[in-house]
Length: 237
Image (cartoon, rainbow, N blue to C red; front, side, top):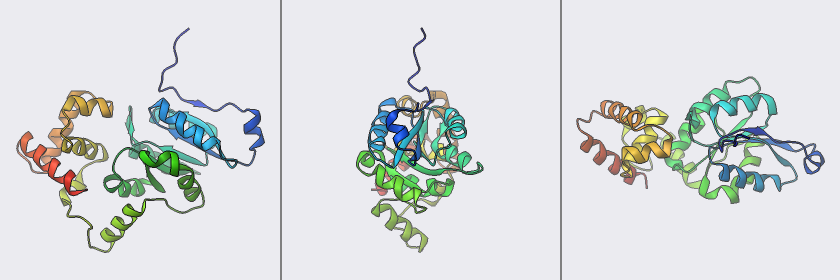
């Protein structure tokens, strides 16, 4: 018998506990790490008014499950093997009767929260806080509100009022979501191979992104790119 892929998706099968939650809101989890999905499912399914209706490890599977599970809310990771979470959020947001969208990621909120909201998400939660705050975030987003940490809320308010909380490089705003992920990891001094491992991309693809980033930021050499990225990442903290 063929082993099941760790990225495999599935809709949850009805059980006695689920049937008892007939009025529960349906939650779909999209993350390529089975342990993360399992942990979130355990926390969410303990709530009487929430039910994990399915799990997906790829953007492709997520789109399929959204159509079949009629989820009320989708929790999306930013890093997926077949695309970025932001691209998935944009696609989901265009669907008729789109469910509410909550991004849950290891990436810094200050870098990606605004992009997530612009893409169509209603909230952003860091994975380090997920087990303790995910239920609060889910309920707030399902109620029609947005969910962000206090720090990110203040940062966005400063940006909207024209008083940036931190000095940022405007040209970085021209990067695509995937390029920003690569740029941030360059700023953390990761090699192309390590970046590829984290983002599930080949070294060749990472080098292509590096070349595009250098052009957009008007940087001539890889050394200049690394120094610029390191300085930029430090300025975000």
